[in-house]
Structures are given as C-alpha cells and as structure tokens.
Image (cartoon, one colour):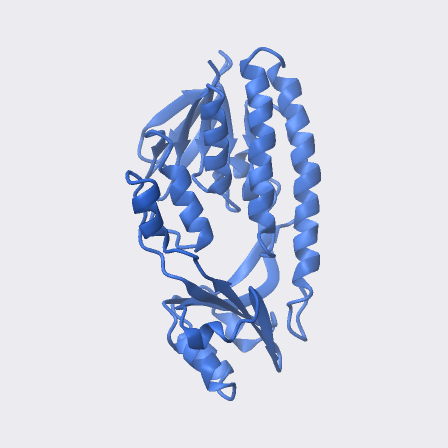
Length: 323
C-alpha cells in the first residue's frame, strides 16, 4: 500500500487526503497550525471543517516541517520542528504560498511583492449592510482607493446544519458577514506599514467623507488588517521528479480573484490522486506518473497565476499596477 505524507491541511491537501483514503491508500496530513480555528475564511473555513471531520484521525496539528529527505530505500521522511518524523513513499507539499517543501524543492523561486496592498475585514451581516452589496459583490471607487464588498451569506448557519445532518461533526458557529477589502496604490503612505494588526482607524481616515453606511461597515468589523499580496518571482519552473511534489499555492500562488487559487488547488488534488492511485494499483511507475502530474500542474498553475494577475488589473486603483 502506497503511503502518502501531505504537508498542509488546507483545502487542496485535505481534498487529496479524502480522495486517497477512498482509493485505499495510506495517507496522513501534517499541519503547522495548532488547531482548526486559526483561519476564519467564511465558506472555505466551513468546507475545511467538513473535510477535517471525516478523516478518521489522519490529521496531526502542530507539525511544522523542518526538513525532508529522500532515502536510499525508496522512501521519503519528513522531519518536524518538534523533533518527530514521519516516513512514506510520497510527500506532497500542500503548505501554501510560503511552502517549506517548495523552498527545498525549488529554492530559486522566492516570494516577491505584488504591488497590491490593502486593508481587509469582515462585518456581521445586517439588512443595512447587505443592502450595500447588490448581488454577490460590488466595488466602490474613490480618489486613489477602491473598496470591494462581498456577501458571505449562509442560507443556514453551518453549526445548526451540522448538528442536524452530521451530529458528530464539530462545527464552530459561523454567522453571515460582509467581507470588505480596501485597495491602495503601492505608493500610498499607508502601505509603508503593512501587516498592521488593526487598521480600522486607518481605513476610517481614508473614507472619512464617504457614505455613513460604508463608514459604519468598517467601524463594526470583527477583523481588520493591512497587508501586501505576494506572488512567486517567476513562473514556477520544473524540478527533478522524485518522491516529493507540490500542490496548490505551494506551486502556483495566485492573487485573490474569485476563488482562482482554491479552484486550481482542488483540481491539483483530483489530478494527483488519480496518478497516485495508478501507482498504488501497479498500473503506472512512480516517476512517469509524477512527471505527467508535474507537467499538468505547471501548465495549469502558471496559467492560473497569469489569470489572477490580469484580473487584478481591474481592481488596482489609479496610480498602482499589479505585477
């Protein structure tokens, strides 16, 4: 039975784990976060919780990858910062844009600033705030800034639905909210201090003459911060095919554009699970199968990155340009 180590419990890694488990492979997932509550991402967080809830204890938290080594006996070992290790036949880096696996596999590729900076937050949905968003999303433009609004509205609160439909599934309560992102030109003075923990005062200052409903939307936010988007500094190149490969943002970090990155990662998981199942069933040799997967991954992934860049041009305020 083929043993697969998945590094990272995001949507792509968890989807891969489910597909491999159903195909009868031995799969375990190792996540650097200490638990499931670190990432509150609306629909994605709910889907992640659903995927986590049906993996039969195959996910280990607090496992930050320190190193990995391919052994002479045809196995690969993951070494974690807590001193533990795990050995399998294939290791998959599904650990996001700042992937520890990618840094060893393709060290020449680094993260660079995408010249796209902004503040973001989420505000509990009320009728007043939902009226600001016709359809699923909208944009409000001001001098040198753009405010993007999106409805994150559940038809039914996920915790209540889980309690009825899947009683054993732990699901934290997730209320509907309005997600907002304020984009700034890269040369705006506010971009000089990215990664601020709370940006309400900054955003309120920038929109001080905007409609009161928009100001109250920001004022009532549960979470707000300033940050810069990152991308890989070149199209992802190929790497020598072995027992280690990549998936999702680890291989193709895209700018946020309507689920582009998540959708591509899910397709990665489907394609990789098919190749690994063929290997496990003896229908394909490992190197040719993973070579085919890598070729497909790079073609689709690099195209998704480029699509994200082109989409970002529609949202960049005057005076700024996304690389």
